[in-house]
Image (cartoon, rainbow over the protein chains, first blue to last red):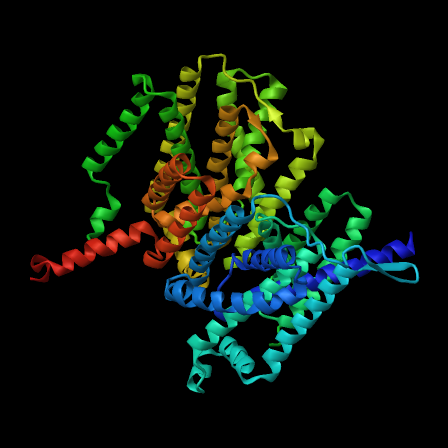
Length: 291
Length: 329
């Protein structure tokens, strides 16, 4: 077997996985903390990608700089969505089902708004450094992939630090583990949930930019992204940030390796098959939840 | 409510049901435009799909997002049987029954490990299953691969062949709804509802949960597969992207929940209303805008009637009754 090829696909797998991890962390948080399976999570990611694309095309703004706009914008938008749409639903008989249908509606709306604005053509983020390659020995790294990787790694690390070091972050974890007890200790559950949802969706926007660095995207792309989200979050364990990050890398590596040795169409088959097997054998995820 | 009323169906209701079915059966022979026959065919199709989903999703509370896999398996089985055995129109129609049986067998194989998972995990694994089956069919050349499969159309004028399809689907929807009513009144249905409420408690009360879930899943796969077979004959061309389109799976779940899962009438109502709304929107509004309105509809329904149309209207009529002075007295 060709060692260089294996290592190269391992590297691209790790890069891919880091981006999926950033996209998955927020999904995992809103599922774990608020019991909201946000079907529109990946669609919000697409909005991040399209904002980056638009700013790059119109004003030549670097996609990473565009996050300065995307992240606050999506945070505010998500807080509004949570307060106006999702909060009334949390009183329903089955929160998970109701929130799935509701956010499915949100995803349809976002997808078709993007279709109206941009049309169905696939887009590529073409930056000034898109064609540049970093060569280390026999391995090569494309600059956009590196940018996506560094941004995603930083994003996941930031969310982890927020949850483990700040007061609000600790309150989020408390609200997840013991909602009643947390409220008794003066945690405002409504406020914490709103902030969590805002952070989750804002990180999805950043993850969307990360994916846009790696692949072309169009308004329907969020459907496939969503499947990968489920994969990453379930393998990593719902609500487990570091587990999600690890799962992202594992799945990225598996996908990267199988892309090197299998025809493209069989890769997705393998991935979904793998998810089914993991679900049957270990539905709680591969990692012990330690939040 | 009165206990007797839930066990015996009033004569009036049976008569009303028979009249509705007869009128619907006569409709295509009164010379309406083909458009309406095809449209009602679509309504029947979705009522069948939503009602069959209801066996596992509504009564037992296991949200299957993999129904389209059974639909597609039924469609492919019918197409392959027609091509392989050189079946005529009648043969093709009857081949939809073994096609449904095949879908039920597949559901048993897949249900055995998957039905142990609960809540969102079951939803995700069935969704994955739908994707796996679609990808497999797209890549297997034995079943036509990405080229799809052709069926021999009926050698009849379009009005007549559409009417025959219409009648076949009407029979199927009638049977499915009848079975659904029967299940909702049976011990089997009570067992499924017990599983939905609390599976552990149900099992301690001697409800054989794994067996009941498997049976409900197989029942839902059978009717879905048979509907897929008729649909394949109706289309005369099938492709993995058409009959395994995951959006169909999601639409089925939404229709049933929109009407109200767990009752036999809910999915019938939900599927009818949403098919009509969909048709109106796609006729009069730009496609993207229509989808946006469709999305808004889900949001509005979930916020204002989180437990479906049925529950919403039942509550309203109860409120009115309790507000009126007679019932207070």
